[in-house]
Image (cartoon, rainbow, N blue to C red; front, side, top):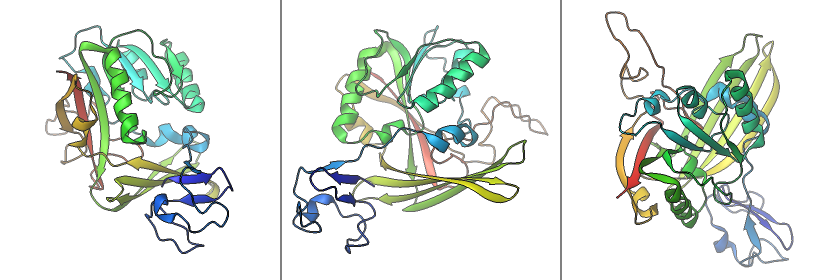
Length: 324
């Protein structure tokens, strides 16, 4: 859903949904519309600029922790291949869903995100848990990183799929390799839809009786290798809807073979692991004790904008990248 704003006449075009007023169907790229639609600019090349997607904010930032789950945070703690002490650069750290428990487990953490509202929640978690580590507010492509080498550089929850354009993804990895320790890992999490359209609704009731609903809808365009996601948050009080919030985002479809072509020459894919829920015991960590009555040590369902549960709507993958 690339939305374009014309800097000449203000015309707005949505390439994923088309233009219902002017009869343009879905999935029509803007370059095809030249000399049509607008009498002022004629959709001339160069005048329409892609709209920058806003960081997580509003109800999305407020309710993110209610619906993001856990997604096997323990997997990062038990990685025995890394030399200790382990240092972590969490890119797109958000509210600290991953980096806060890893800091509590003894990792040396640096967090970066471009949403001040998400980072405000992260800082509150730092204060509550009495842990302190650097938090950087900024866009990873533009901001300066500390002059440090990290054991793990983490891009979780499909962060790479938020980075627009192939050249920006390549630029990102060229930047990150400068901060990667010699035996370190860049860990990338992506999701791949199993169908052209999907929908998932999650519900959480709070102790004050307020009911929260989160619905994630997605539409896949194989031609564009894009996914348009519509995320709806709804708050019910005494069974009456009191608040609705909608955000739409375009994400890139990244297939497993695509990763190799994004990487600079010095980096290579070391390991690919699927971590969504594929079995009856898939929501237990491998270290969980399963006698006659199961004892669950670690619950691992999570992921955003769509969870890695057993619905089969998407598959979630973890890709480990290191030096050749």
